[in-house]
Length: 249
Ligand SMILES: N[C@@H](CCC(=O)N[C@@H](CS)C(=O)NCC(=O)O)C(=O)O
Image (cartoon, helix red, strand yellow):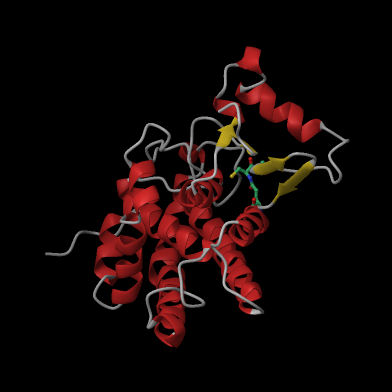
């Protein structure tokens, strides 16, 4: 996109953490270039991403993707990028509540690490197949303790947000935190369909928020587009049937 204001640097073949950034850009209708999806001879591919990570002339060097570039500004850390974009595009609450939107983003980032570690409890550099026994133990605890804990927390936050009558996490309108919660819910649905459906009745606001975000016009258009990569077993949210709960009913 020639006139794009933003450049996103992220791995080309997965949604990963880049997806949290894409959802804010897409909902905002902000043109962006997904740099690593460009051909290598146009500065894209994994070499394009690696070149960005290696740069020392970007203000503050970046350790890991996603990285957002806007002119001379480079920012990494998913939560920081989402908050930055949310502020610029009407997807952040007014006043001090903006810090609560950030705290929710960071809480989601912690949760994403836990989700990732279900299938990679020992090391990200090892294959899943080299840590299946540990993954089974880790995921049992995740399903029994950590998943209900986090879903219960976000359901509680929604129920306490009188400004939006429980429709959005913070403030009166949809914010970048809601878009990220949508991504987590959608990813969990892919990875752990049985465990998630067992929790649906106790978390009505969370599931309603997922549907509400999915129906936002720009999000619906994005989800139907080729830009939305399907979930797969290379990303954060992976479906290994042996890690999910047994289906009920
Ligand atoms: N806390 C960072 C984590 C970034 C991160 O772990 N990025 C992954 C891709 S999703 C990566 O490529 N990490 C490279 C590495 O850890 O060596 C964020 O939320 O952006």
